[in-house]
Each structure stands twice: as C-alpha cells, then as structure tokens.
Length: 257
Ligand SMILES: Nc1ncnc2c1ncn2[C@@H]1O[C@H](COP(=O)(O)OP(=O)(O)O)[C@@H](O)[C@H]1O
Ligand SMILES: [Mg+2]
Image (cartoon, rainbow, N blue to C red):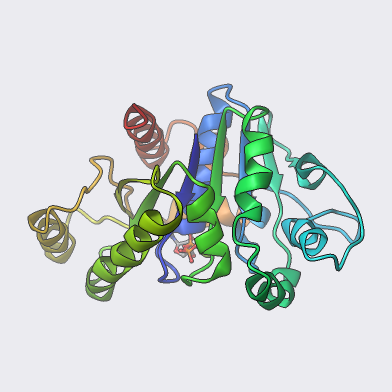
C-alpha cells in the first residue's frame, strides 16, 4: 500500500506523521520505504539517514528521468537502508527544487508512479512525505498513491484550508488516479485541555469530513525524537504518543480494505 501524507500548509506534521508511520510499520516487521519529496529533507534527517555527496537521492532519480543524468539505474538504486531494521528511505535533496521546472515542462508527472510500481513488490508499505505546496512533487505523489491522509494541526487557518486541499486532490483523482482514496484527516498537536481543537474537529465532522479516530497529542517528546533522529516507536516505545501512532497505523491499515 502506498500512502501519501499531504497538506499544502507547512508545519502541520507531514514529516512527523509520515516518518513515524513508516517507523511503526518497520517495527512491526514490515519492509517499509519512506520517500521524502520535500526539498527540506526533514524526514530524511529524522529517519537518521545522512546524505553524502555519493548518496543517490530522489532528486537524482528525477534527474535521470529528464536526462540531466545519462544513467539507467533502477528505482531501488535510490533506496537506502536507515539505522532501523526494515526501514528504508529514498532521501530528499535540495536539488529537487532545481529539477522541478524541467520535470513539469516535460510532463513527467507519472514517472514517480512508474518507479514506485517497480518497488511495490519489494516493500510491504510505502509512505511518502510531501512538500508544503500543491506542486509537481505532491501531485506526482498523489498520482502514485493508493491513499492519502491529511494532517490537521487544530488551527483555524488549517481548517479553512482543508476544503480547498480536498477539492484539489479530488480533481487530480478524477483526472489521473481514480483509485486514490482519502483515508482520512489526522488530528495532530491535539490538546484535550483546550476548547478550540475540539470545536474545530467538530466543524470538520459536521462537513462530513472523515476525521480519523486516532488523535496525535501535542507533546515535547515529538520534538525530542526529531532532534535525536529517532522516530517515536524506537525512541519511546511505550509513550502515549507512540501508542497513538500505532493506533493510527492500525486505523489506516484497516481502511485498506
Ligand atoms: N504532535 C506534536 N507535538 C508536538 N510538536 C509537534 C507535533 N507534531 C509536529 N510537531 C512539531 O511541529 C513542527 C512541524 O512538524 P512537521 O512534521 O515538520 O510538519 P510539516 O512536515 O507539515 O511541515 C516540528 O517542529 C515538529 O517537531
Ligand atoms: Mg515536512
């Protein structure tokens, strides 16, 4: 199953959620790939992978697509092991920004789908982290995916942006990927003491939006695990927020069928 974590707003938890879901999947023994399509490379960093001059990144795969690199490497040449068992990464690079216009002008939007199709047999689960834009890379990810989930950080502006986001995604589904499914909205940075998050979530539900039941709490442990470069299932296997990630993983898994 290929799952994209997408929201065109920055700072809502895309990298946190995609990395931790991938880590949870790997911890359960599933061979898992995390594809980092954000040039900032937050999830590449979080998963403990050090990009060196020699590492082949997802940007290099796209450079091959447009002929900047005259190589013919298979998609798995751009996949690397992480410090964690069963967890692999297709790392990002700042070069993603350089190659984007070339990819767009040459209509290469289906190339990620082709590459992941080859990798799908090798991996039990593939998670894709996306940039905070509805740009070439997030579109290519939604075209390549079976399903997507949308992190929501319990902020008023985010609630307003969700409707537009879903319209964009549904148009893309209609045009390019009819099998794409909205798996649900992931409530992140939840604070049960505050009134606003509950009100905002209620508003989403009233709009008939599929809000997933597993909320992810706001906790400093998330930031700690980022700085230690240890996703939560490995950093704090027994913490409440790790259990929430595990529950979210199960919920997404259940919605496969
Ligand atoms: N549940 C959470 N609790 C506390 N901090 C969080 C939580 N989720 C995300 N953050 C923090 O919020 C910031 C943005 O998260 P990130 O995953 O990078 O968002 P995005 O990828 O959407 O830009 C990061 O500093 C991250 O550590
Ligand atoms: Mg991010």
